[in-house]
Every structure is written in structure tokens, then in C-alpha cells.
Length: 98
Image (cartoon, rainbow, N blue to C red; front, side, top):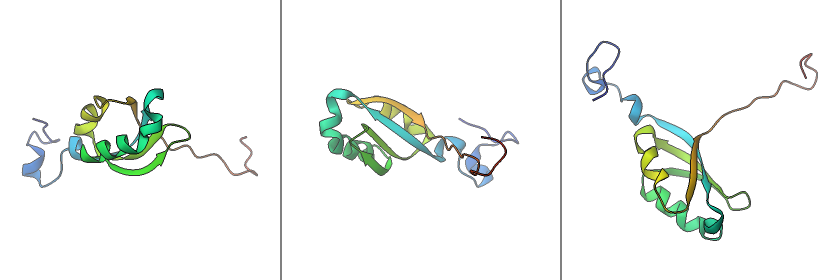
């Protein structure tokens, strides 16, 4: 059981456990499954992932899922890897750092 900062279970504190918080993920599809990526996206959805993009050209599916369910989708046939989505922001073109 995950405990909150005061040592109480998260549910007793009236907030969701960090394991239940949705996180954005990028699922890489194995090469042999890319042609059937739509079926994998349906299985990911059935496993609790809210699929936002199916990118057949690069073999990835993006979406959100509870941290506690990441291990479940990693075990699905056709999943090569699951990574937390990272946001990269470049400085403006006129910025002194390039």
C-alpha cells in the first residue's frame, strides 16, 4: 500500500495515489506488429490506456495510462517498449542560446 506524506493511505487523505495518476506514454511497436498497429491500439485501450495517436509510419502509439498499469501494457504481444513521454521545448530563434 502506498502511503501519503503524512503516513496515511492516499485514499484516506481524499486524493488519488500517485500510482493511479495518469501519465503520458509512448508505446513502441515491434517491427513484426507494425502492420497490425490498429489492433494493438485496441488492446492497449482495453488495458486502460487512453489512446491519443496511432503513428503507423514510425511504429508508435501515444496516450495516457495510470502508472500502476504500465507493467500490464509492457507485457502485451507486439509492445517493444513503453516510455514516459518527454516534452522538449526549444528556445525561440532570436534567443542567445542556440
